[in-house]
Length: 276
Image 1 (tube, rainbow, N blue to C red):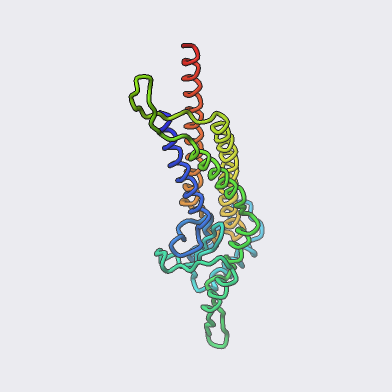
Image 2: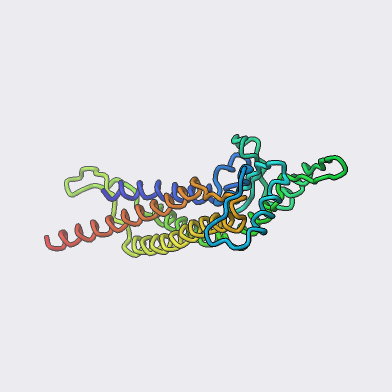
């Protein structure tokens, strides 16, 4: 039973570290553009402007909506991850058409290259796919609100627990009193198992704080973006990133429970042996 628990915990610890690594790598490449914390996109042009309850001055709201439509009905979407940003068009849902980079300046230059000037008679209007600077907003969110330090610490703690798990004694052959060869697997050291349990408790705490921070900040920023732009921009929380974060926390909890069950089982076996 102890051998099964150790093997399962090693596999689960590996899966937890992989989940955290994928979460951190979100929006660093086109293939990872589906893993994002926050998505900001322009809403389609509305035929009429709706005044929200409690809104006294509508001038700012109308101005923001007018500016947002200088992109000629732009459908730009900006996604923000821990280490990068991705931009693409909403109607083109394929990841291949998104451009991702760890530098907001590079993406801004890419978007600026698509700026056009449309002439209507004697007047001209400059249209850009990002009239409200959503790339800048997403970069500010990534730099000033998102914090990935706890995730790195969680990975380190889980790596320590994984290494300690690999030190558990393996099966080996011994001869019993009758001279027969039997396979024996000694119990792991109590200090080592206790160190693993402590490491997992610390990792669970750090991971829980990190995912809560990530979830609350992403949803709050999405709501604030919609409110401050008076509905011209919609914000969305990345379901894939949130799922990876909560799954990683769940895995740490399962591994920790497995270690606790193993410690209790060994203690009961030793007590029964001492009584005999």
